[in-house]
Amino acid sequence: MKVPMVDMLAGYPPIKDEIEAAVKNVFNKAHFILGEDVAKFEKDFAAHNGAKYCVGVANGTDALRMAYIASGIRKGDEVITSPFTFIATSETISQVGAVPVFADIDPVTFNLDPKSVEKKITKKTRAIVPVHLYGMPCDMDAIMALAKKHNLIVVEDTAQAFTGKYKLGGKDWKYLGTMGHCGTFSFFPAKNLGAFGDGGAVLTNDENIHATLIQLRNHGSKVRYHHEMEGFNSRLDTVQAAILSIRLRHVEKWTEMRAKVAAKYAEQLKGVCVTPVVPANARHSFNYYTIRFDSKAKRDNAQKYLTEVGIANQIYYPIALHLQEAYKHLGGKKGDLPVCDAVMDTVFSLPMYPELTDEQIKAVTDAVKTSLSVTAK
Ligand SMILES: *Cc1c(COP(=O)(O)O)cnc(C)c1O
Image 1 (cartoon, rainbow, N blue to C red):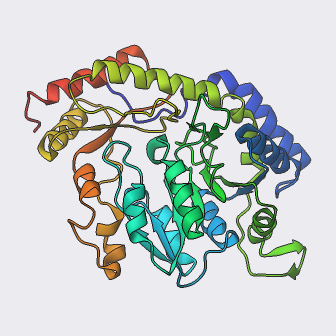
Image 2 (image 1 turned 90 degrees about the vertical axis):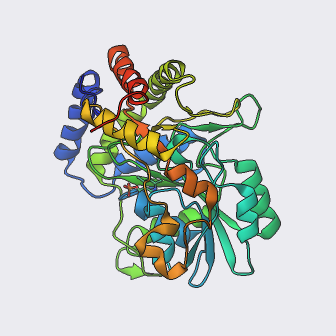
């Protein structure tokens, strides 16, 4: 049985009419840049997350870059982040003139290990960028405590973790992306809330950061042709905003569906490999479902075997950032971040989207099990 990594069309039929009406409405108004559709989505997205402000931007990468600038990261600053993430997290650190510093990760959550972060703090450290990888919440209490102690900025890369929650059960539970000075989001089609193209957003509760972001996304200007600073052309597209407002109304249900798929995977893979261990008081967004083997050989064989039988799979990420050619100048080498080195060699991700059927799930887990007893070609 063929199983794709994601199926962008599976969830479309039930909302097709709503989406097409919304798009037609934008076309009829012919107000294509910003306007009320973007403002409405920003209001809805902020309210959904319990944040004060949302600024819609062109994509999740620009969201990071502008969040770094707006929250005060400057040339020469050191910014501590995870080596086990997509390069968007760190390339944007360099692009604002700062230096990415990679700390090691936790062997269970695969997210920044606060103890390793603390060891990397120097006089030049200005910020910490936790990444809620795959949708798994970071240890935000420990990260925020470190930030407070050392007077650091925190920008949460929430590209994979919208609808994830932290400290459930308590009165002060939060959506991921609302605990740092800024939280950044991506609406790339394959994320939990996907647009029909590119899109992104920044959440913040800080009035000044919000005001700066509004300027940055529009060439540093509040009033047309008056530029208080240099900025970017990075507005959330109006057609995408209209689509996102509709998809936002379904996203919690989709995350529940993802969680059900995850629970079935976990049950069927018990004792076969390591499945995600979600802290009891947290909600994983399950943007990706990542399993771990006890050796690289087993992982590589499983990956090859699944591909052979038509089951899509992907290693997020095969080469950690500290070992990438792009960061050779930082002098990172294998052994510097031993947990990360071991994790990147033993994980891979299975197909994950809300509409996966029981038959597909069984085909995936059967293939993982079989891979342990056969040698893939
Ligand atoms: C997808 C992603 C981004 C970038 O988002 P784009 O919208 O593709 O620019 C940044 N960080 C992480 C962790 C991501 O997964």
